[in-house]
Image 1 (cartoon, rainbow, N blue to C red):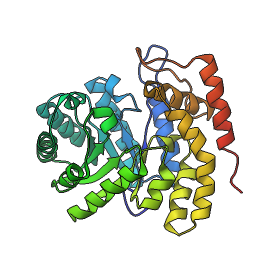
Image 2: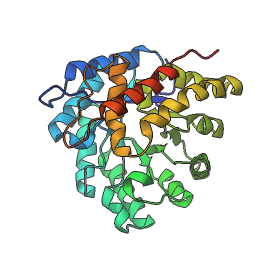
Image 3: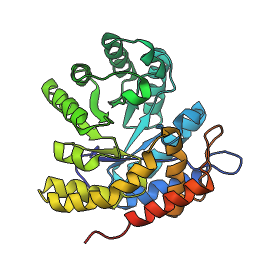
Image 4: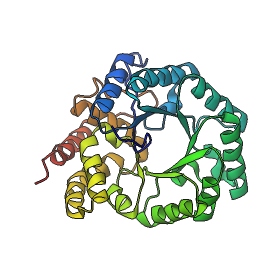
Length: 309
């Protein structure tokens, strides 16, 4: 197992039964698969791809407890997303404390969606500082302007990295230039803050830029390819990493192409294709894929698993 407990974190997807209740047996099976690869250092639960927004408070806590039960005996970590559901600082702090009580090793925070209505940099920093202090648990901050409506300049990212309690940044910048700028901003903060690549579609370039690790839902499908690509970059075998990326990128692009609302059902359909989930069912009103979309996705996925020479 990796010595860095936050090097490669897999964001779990919650399977649902016919009545839209959580399939806890199926979820535990997914967790066991990910940890059993020997490549992951931990699990992330209740994030956007895991339909965390659709879960009740009780369900979120049950999912955290399930992840802890799967991860802790093997020395793996559990990170609980506590956002973007809380719309107030007090609610976010409460969710962080509940995650800690449920056994999580860290939380991941995203700004409330309404921040995009005009919240300024000082407000973002004040919010994160308050939750990091009040939650009393290590925090990853999710730099994802596309989801929260906040324009994360390098200056804001540097200020976030200076906040005590923030141990990492999940960066989902849409360009490697943006990722590099944020990476440099975190380094300027001169604290032990990890910068994890969170954009599943530009992994190779972020790895070359210097990502400390990964926090990805794509691990549920291609953990071996992703980690091998990362390690190849680390050891200087760029040609090998590029060859893996050339095979993986079309699948990643197909899964995360617009509209992003379809990313979750695409990912679930892919897990069914990979025989790692029994049903691609999502909670209403999340849309399902059409038969045509399903078939096109499967053709792309099949091409991605051809071994790299």
